[in-house]
Image 1 (cartoon, rainbow, N blue to C red):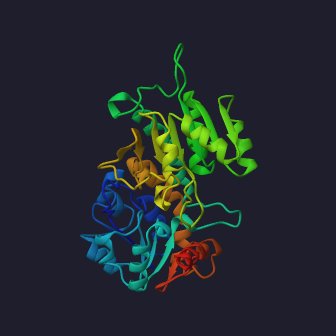
Image 2: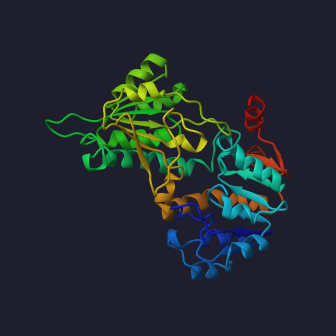
Image 3: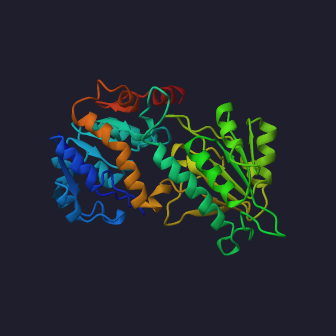
Length: 357
């Protein structure tokens, strides 16, 4: 099978779908890997690194898409990618179609088959291709939030972990999955007062065990509102696989937060769980509403492309091998990840979203 790895063209996106070691593994399995020149540059991998791993370098996107049957890319295709996609392609990447009906229509119009990294799901319910990026996004949410609380960044001038004779910052996290759980661990380790909300008792128990500075609660509306309004840093980390994220924090509640507080909505890819969220990029990552700093970059892990590419490639290899061996119809986790099949929407959550509109 011919596998193509294009250069990502979304602004400030430096990740690459497969690192050289992964390309080597695919070549050893008898598959051809084509890599667009420069695809790995921002992740610290040169064209020479890919060539040494046995990949074939191609000069541009047209040549890449023209050579490959399976396209492995990190972010959803934008205009510069869409013009090269064809009906015979199998697209494998983060798609987040629930929040992007126009892209869904474009992919269906092309007639291709698309599997979303974020919807590949094991029997246990685990999301193995979303998890590594969720881990990174959760950690980054706290690092970035702590920086945005600094007064030169527009924040209230608060040291998140506090210190002797100075109060600790208060962090509220909605969702205790991979992203929210990592955010809670990072915030707790920094010494902040952390309140985490989730519906699953097992997750609440896990969060409570992080330390005495962590409170884990069921998201009753009154409890959630009180914690949101009191937060110095509010982190949204809600996910319903394949579906648009429900809005759990209202604009009214954000307006009740103190000026200089910070909102980071990790779930912005799926529409966001905070009403005041709107997608941003690393070129212009923040905006103010009612004096509250909002950060809603849709490709948060793109800030650490080397770490992210290494983690993603390790997770991807067994699934790319399965696809390349013609196993889409035999691999249940990949079947669950199908968003579009031969130009028709196939994921149940997307079908449900379409029928409700």
